[in-house]
Length: 481
Ligand code: HEM
Image 1 (tube, protein in one colour):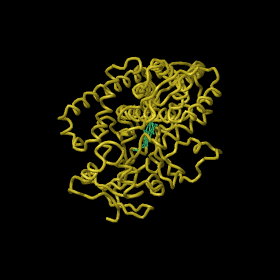
Image 2 (cartoon, helix red, strand yellow):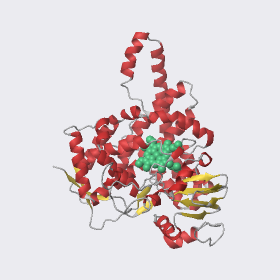
Image 3 (spheres, protein in one colour):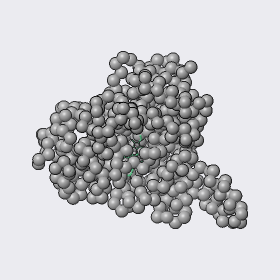
Image 4 (tube, helix red, strand yellow):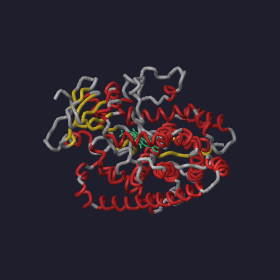
C-alpha cells in the first residue's frame, strides 16, 4: 500500500484505463510517464497481478543476485508455445542445471569459430545494402533483420536458411509472422487468453507459423543427429594413430550450437532431444531480434552523429587495413566501436525491461516490501536514463565507455547499466551478440556512410518484445570512396 502508482479505476482491469487515457496502448511513453510521476520505484496492476517496477540499482542488484527471485514473470508464458522449457523460460532446478550445462557452449574458443559465418553473411548484407545507395531515405531494418536471421540460423542450427537471398521462403515468412503475433499479443492484453487467441486469425496464423518453425528445427536435429552418430561410429572403428590425425582435423571443424548440444546428448548428459529442440528454438528467438534492433539503433545514432561515425570508420580502417574478412583478433581490437554499441544499448536497450516472479514476500533495499504473488519489473531503460547513474543521460557519448577517456563515466553503480541483464539470469549470449554486432557494423561501415533521412528524424519508439520503432529506421546510404 505504501508504493506509489497509478489509480485503480475499475478493479479487475488493472491500470489499463489509466494507461490508455494517458499514454495509449503502444509506444514507450508509459514507461517514461510513470517514471516521471512516481520515481524509481512504483507499482501497477496488470489485471489481478501487482507488478512492482524498479530502476533503483540497489534494488536491481538485490533482485538479480537473489536465489529466491530466479523465476521469470508469468507474462513470459506467451512465449511458451514457441520456446517450450528452454533456458529463457525454465525455472528452479531445471534452469540451474541447464545453465551450467550450456555455459561452455558460449566459450570464447567456440565463438571464435563463428567469425567465418559473420564474414560470409556480412558480405551478402554489404552487397544488398549497395542496392540502396542513391535511392534516398530507405528503411534499413528489413535488411538488418534478414541478415541477423541468417547469422543465427547458421550458428545455432548449422543450416543456411538464406533469408537474405530468399526473403519469401516459407521459413523466413513464418519467423516474421510468429514474431509479429508475439508482439501484438503483448500489446493487446485480452489476447493473452489462449482459447480466445486461437479463435482469432492472428492466433491461427501464429500456430501455423510455429508448425513451420518447429518442423524445420526438428528436421535439422534429425539430420545432424544421424550425421554425428555416423561420425562417432567411424571414429570408434579407427586406430589410435588415425584418431590423433582426426583430432587435428576435427579441431578445425566448426561445431555449431546444435552439434555441441547433440554431442552432449549422445555422450549421456542430462539433455534429451526434446530439451535440445527447446534450446535451439530459444537461441533462434533470443538471438535474432535483439541484435537486429541494436544494430539499427547504432546506425541511426551514427547518422545523427557523423563525427562519431567517421571515428569508427577510421578505427575499422586502421585495424583491418585492406583485409575484407575480419578475424576474431581484429574484432577485439575495435575498442571504439565496442564503446559505440554499448552507448547505443544504454540509450536504446533491446530488452528495456524484464520480469521476475516474487513467490515469497521480499523487501527491497529501497525500503518497499513486495507481497508474495506479485511480479517485479526491472526497468533497465529508466536506470540507463537516470542522471544519478549517468552524467547528461540523454546525450549520446560513447566515450563514457572508453577506458581512460576524460568522459569515462565513473559515477555508475555496477547494476545501473544492464542491457544484458545481470546476476544469475543474465544473457548467456552476450559475448556472441557483441561479436556478431561488431562484425556486422565493421563490415558495412567500412563500405558505406549512413546519413540522416531528414533534419527532424526522431525515432517513434515502440515497446514490443524488444525495443523497436513504429516506422522503421529510415537512412540514406552513400558509398565510401
Ligand atoms: C543485443 C543482443 C542481446 C541483448 C540486448 C540481450 C539481452 C538479454 C536480456 C536482458 C536477458 C534477460 C531477460 C530476462 O531476464 O527476461 C537475456 C537472456 C537471454 N539471452 Fe540474450 N540478449 C541478446 C542477444 C542474445 C543472443 C545472440 C543469444 C543467443 C545466441 C541470447 C540468448 C539468451 C538466453 C538463452 C537468455 C536466457 C538466459 C537465462 O535465463 O539463463 N541473447 N538476453
